[in-house]
Amino acid sequence: MARQALQAALDEGWADPARLYREGRRARLLLDAAREAAAEAVGCRPDELVFTPSGTRAVHSGVAGALAGRRRTGRHLVVSAVEHSSVLHAAAAHEADGGTVTEVPVDRTGRVAPEAYAAALGDGTALACLQSANHEVGTEQPVAEVAAACREAGVPLLVDAAQSLAWGPVAGEWSLLTASAHKWGGPAGVGLLAVRKGVRFAPQGPADERESGRAAGFENIPGIVAAAASLRAVRAEAAEEAGRLRELVERVRARVAGSVPDVEVVGDPVRRLPHLVTFSCLYVDGEALLHELDRAGFSVSSGSSCTSSTLTPSHVLRAMGVLSEGNVRVSLPFGTAEADVERFLQVLPGTVAQLRERFGAPAAAPATGGEESLVVDALGRRCPIPVIELAKVFGDVPVGGTVTVLSDDEAARLDIPAWCEMRGQEYVGERPADHGTAYMVRRTS
Image (cartoon, rainbow, N blue to C red):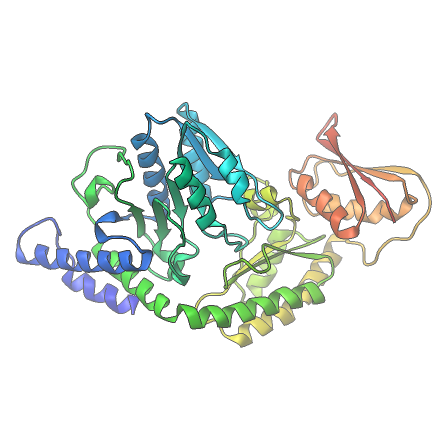
């Protein structure tokens, strides 16, 4: 449907919708119809919604405009620690410009506590931001409760609904909302920004007469028409498809945990998106795992540090405090076949086992005996090697003894405590070392 709408709009919507000649009026009709369809899906008025060149641009415009509109109130911005990078980049720009930012922490499932979020709001808070659901682990956020707290405090709430809008409107009395068409199967290069009437909003940048002054430049009418058509189409099937995909994701969560040793399935097991599942595998290099799965025909993502040019773990996994090494994020698009999921579940255990053997991971839990304290020098070695080296020597200390791991890999700050939790051992803590950081683990059993 989206492809047909795009092709038709390329023929009929090429003209400037701001002009009064026939082709311009035709383009304006297409734009207005798309706006009405998108506004219905969002749950706002058509004159509250504008189209932007991307979801990222929608976020940046929404954050900057809301902050500028409430500058007299204060310059304090509240975000969650697991927001999309576009929100965190906007927050960093605000902070660099003299504003203040509070990041509300999340629990181990990636969810904020509404009371913690409410406590972060103050008299000088100009704006609060909260995603409807996390883009990496699928955890749904308590938007309605946070929106109620924001309304009581007189603070507008901007919701990044990119991941959830395909499945239904966002609950709660939010003030601003952003989304990106490619997340629901529409064309890339189309975002949307909704600003409720009554919200103080001052668009930033040079003034432009298009899209209520909130999105400069010629509207991409074919892309916008296709985005609205695809959103309407997925919404029509959302309830039925959500139930089917949720069952497949439950199968992945259960089978991965049962068939792959030393794995942590992350994210809220109940309050989550129906199509997303994330897990992390001990003793596995994330980039190598993604390459092997790609060779087997599976396109998956990862938040592991070894798949990032910065060599730091995903900020989402870091905020949650979960295992980051060997991380795999599986997103099931509309129409995913059950047979493809089954084949993935058959391929994964052997792939992980082969990679662990390649990296020299311990095949079994080590035995007891020996020294009371050991030091493992893993300086200059990246994940998953520091944790593998820890596991190799852990049996050489008796119960009550310690192992200290020296590492300059940022991922070790997450992965060593996560290993302790999975193994039922005590993570004593960390301290600066001459080079890198020293992580101490005590054997309890």
